[in-house]
Image 1 (cartoon, rainbow, N blue to C red):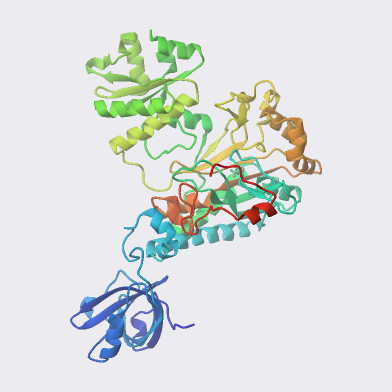
Image 2: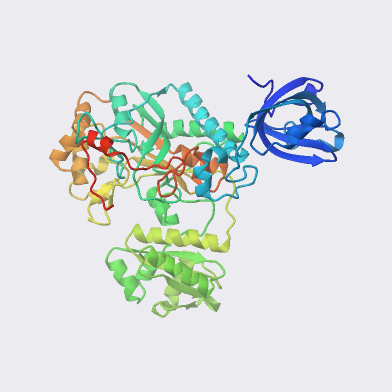
Length: 586
Ligand code: ASP
């Protein structure tokens, strides 16, 4: 190595040693003739001192250095004078008196100052990601990511799991998003898909008898851009044979416990609490509830259905539901307008407001439809008190619960509610197997079509698919969905029935899933698995604002890479080789 020590290493114990350090020039200061330069590397900082009285030429050379120049410095370790000692950095007790300086590489004028805290705008930071990544907080994020993945590997290895890679070029697996396609040159007109997840492969590994599989798997989904979404992301993908829900929960909890121990020195309380999908929707209006604060929803369908309000009566007649949330201490006009707009934007017909006045009297546009006895019941059910405002929305379930879930979150934001501190993991279980496609009204898989229905509901697959419950589960942390999993279908005929239920024709079943169904015919261990997202987990642990801060080379929200300019046009020759021609407006 060109260096004898790294930047985080030297302490008072090294006093008097002659050392050679290499690193980036971080900051320099001229104090009373002495020139101080902080050298930086991944491990920390070390203060280097140049004294013009001892060597004026050397000090002049050092003064000419610029931030981010890469240098090699040799000198002797000295204790810093008492008033210059620092306890906040590892090398705060010492400094190196330089007697030799070699510039290994000069830094050109920088597009932004690396030593400044995030002053540069994100597109610039992403274009010069290799400079952005020099900043210590970014390096810390990547280190936490490494420790996270390492802890996962250690734990799963100790539990008998094998880490197995699956193809990146594959046949499309339906996970609900659009595929990224890769044209085949050898087989013109044919395409590989990048994996949305290794779902079918991991199940085939169970068919193969590998028993316990995991992979730190890269997944690709061509979805519409969103702030916290990346077109490629990393999952801890795992699958276990002869396993059921509790087995997957236990292993996942063990892996997370290892991660929190290694990254934050925190002992997670196990097991994680569980909540059914219906309870989550009814209480929080979310299938990934943030349970760190109250403002819970209440079901006021019965009370409102008995009122004289035509809206409420109609909703109840049509089998809809009415959900309420209480705003303690009431709302300003502006706040009420904002919440009403939010509810409408999310698809509600409107938001009803009932202000609770003296003596439990209700005020508001719909209050006249409630008799005093009914008003009192509304107060009892919601727990609202004088001065509070009850907000209610009516309509079909689960859409209306979701609207009120958004109102709940917005209300929490408005009132600056204090969220419970710490790490609140939650298993959400008992999801419906299908949900209604908003466009066609037909059933689509809530998770993916390989999820097992509950045995007692299988008989309704053809006649009433939306009532069929599944053996799927989600893992949620502080209101963020970390990942989903399920007990899988392992009988070919049941797999066919589920695919048919979501409108896949028999020909398509053979064409797209024939190989998989055939595999299910040769003796299959019942199996189950899960795939928590690594980016999201590390993002929460690091407590950074954007998920991109925990990914070394992320894409922008528009799925572009300012660093290398991808996606980018390719040459006509490349297209010809692939047998492709473009049909786009210039
Ligand atoms: N493949 C699923 C997903 O990516 C997870 C699973 O069911 O294991 O969401």
